[in-house]
Length: 124
Length: 109
Image 1 (cartoon, rainbow over the protein chains, first blue to last red):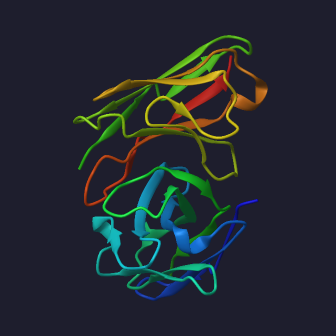
Image 2 (cartoon, rainbow over the protein chains, first blue to last red; image 1 turned 90 degrees about the vertical axis):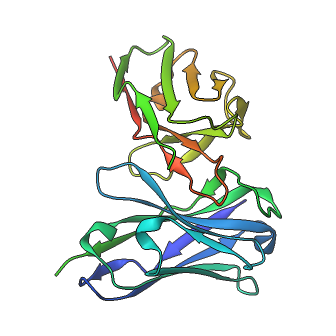
């Protein structure tokens, strides 16, 4: 069965960096685009970034451009989110999510599986 | 940015009754609209995509309709496990700028 397990969250001071990981299993990781989605405490869902199945392209929401980098290692079935210059408003549970359609290029898709999330708290 | 607006914010319905949730887009998203369910402390779960297609394993009591800017999620006979938060999401932009509605909380009346 499809499993996505995030890790790397924690408490970090404003301006510092943190790297999240998401280990995938139960499917051909290298065939699916992957996303990060976040949810601030008591708030709704916010899309953060996407990376194509082959890692060739990445896209970001405006509020994290230039600060966050999404990447993947298909040999390790692992997705990453490198977060730098963190701000209080980045505090959230971060979920990794799989695109519902395989081998997608220049198109979009909903997310059919999400992990359980990892909490990032940015506070001094 | 396409803004998604859900109504109502909270919906109180009795078990066994029908629930109707609405989602409006600030501009047309064609049928590129998904619905997700989120139970407390859990990750979102895909219910509907393409505005009206049920995802794998989703019971037939869940149905979606609409296109363009107006969408509806209907749950025909509410079960206890259906009381949760529901989000709509558009995935129509290129380059991608996925946006979610603010959510509708479905609570027991």
